[in-house]
Amino acid sequence: MSGVWGADRVRAAEDEVFKRVPEGALMRRAAFGLANHAMTMLAELTGGVAGRRVTLLVGAGNNGGDALWAGHFLRRRGVAVEAVLLSPDRAHPAGLAALRRSGGRIAADHLAAVRSADLVLDGIVGLSARGPLRPAAAGLVEQVEAPILAVDLPSGVDPDTGVVAGPAVHADATVTFGCLKPVHVLAAGHCGEIHLVDIGIRAELGEPELVVLSDAEVGARWPVPGPTDDKYTQGVTGIAAGSAVYPGAAVLAVGAAIRATSGMVRYAGEAADPVRDRWPEVVATGSVTDTGRVQSWVVGPGLGTGKAGAEVLRRVLAAGVPVCADADAITLLAAEESRWDDRDPDTPMVLTPHDREFARFAGAVGADRVAAARRAAARTGAVVLLKGHATVVAAPDGRVLVNPARSAWLATAGSGDVLAGLIGALLASGLDPLLAAGCAVRAHEVAGQLAARDAPTSASVLVEVLPEAIRTLRLAAGFR
Ligand SMILES: NC(=O)C1=CN([C@@H]2O[C@H](COP(=O)(O)OP(=O)(O)OC[C@H]3O[C@@H](n4cnc5c(N)ncnc54)[C@H](O)[C@@H]3O)[C@@H](O)[C@H]2O)[C@@H](O)CC1
Ligand SMILES: Nc1ncnc2c1ncn2[C@@H]1O[C@H](COP(=O)(O)OP(=O)(O)O)[C@@H](O)[C@H]1O
Ligand SMILES: [K+]
Image (cartoon, rainbow, N blue to C red; front, side):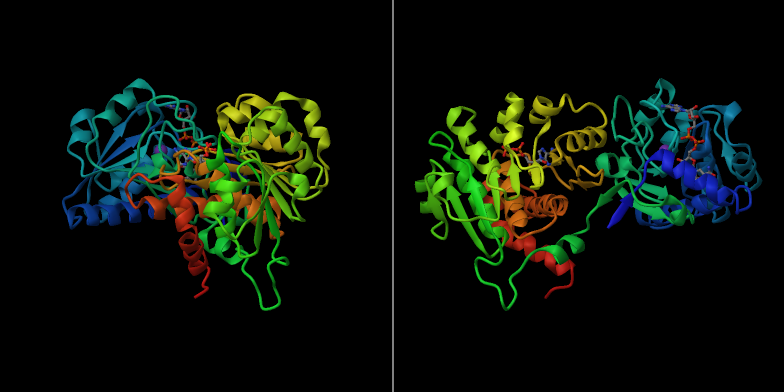
């Protein structure tokens, strides 16, 4: 598990640590780690470091201070270092003095310094950044051809929301200090490879604000049968999805549930024939009332938003088992407030909206996706899984998981139906709903990578590779 802490919490922890460490110690620790990563990058890029040139982009605050101190450590190891001071009057005084002492130069010609660099350190802004890069910095960043190593975070990206509202640094790597911040998981694409340097603030940080589940943690939790299990004891998943018009959604969601766990899947709906044809192991019936007992329901994919769909939703909500409500089920809930009343408030529910579906029941997502998901979860009493490149999963009690996507291959039609089936299967197995949603998202993502292997893929292929994805996760957890 990786914890993630927002800017306010990091600052508060640093303030605590300042009380017991000498002035400037934290910054030197941070900068030393930063310089080490810069050395590694230089060596990898150019085959050696002697005579190589590093240019520092230095802003007005401590982020610039880190860059200046790192420049000092790099100078001591024989690297040529030039600093571009974007606010010369406000450059960190101690960092500037250290750089000068070790023979670093202050660039007179900013453009030439940027163009001649083998590596550029982005120390423009860090945790106190607000808004995109300002024009002078943006103009210089545009001219960079060398790889960029971001100090703490890529400048121009909002530290707490990951929002990129204008020009911003696109880093090849980021060295961050003390802990991961939301930007690293919500805008991972701007950060490149992320390295964490320990500066000794972990104890002061407290409980993380966001959590990223690792492959190993997901693999360790994935339900598999034990010696005393049979098909019923592992949990039976019910799928109420699909219609005469959209049978495919049912086929995909059922397939995902079948492949996710070993127990049993029941299907209820108008697509019983195509579902049975594709998945002979499913017990398929025409309606929710004819279906035998299940330990969870998935409702919504391809269901339709008319009267028939609304009736299916009503019956599923009244069934008293955990529910994953996706797609048309969300639209139906959003359309009539009274439909929420059919739900037993003590029964876990996972809602899986994309942004447009989210807007229908909880208002526009806005810039702060974590806050939006948290708000919706608290209001509905359900786990809210907000889909996207970074998927945010919020529980009503305030816990939040984030899954930063490693690729965008999942942006394909029907991929959400597969995710819903996965969540349903994990809910049926008895996993806590937040974890069921979080583990499903991770498996979905791994399946996306396996399915695509660098070429476009489709939802059907996702279903095919699910066992391989789960095997990958279990291998990461040490199961052979
Ligand atoms: N306090 C410490 O001793 C430590 C601080 N650390 C570093 O300090 C950073 C935070 O430093 P600060 O709080 O001084 O602030 P920053 O360096 O993030 O920002 C400094 C100033 O930049 C200006 N600014 C904000 N947004 C801007 C924009 N979009 N374009 C241009 N200028 C903008 C503001 O005037 C702001 O006060 C961290 O990210 C980390 O790199 C680390 O060295 C760890 C220890
Ligand atoms: N750009 C992207 N990068 C990574 N994942 C994405 C991206 N766009 C969508 N996804 C993922 O793909 C899935 C799409 O689900 P959804 O929008 O419900 O599609 P559908 O309705 O076609 O099944 C979600 O899991 C979402 O997180
Ligand atoms: K930065």
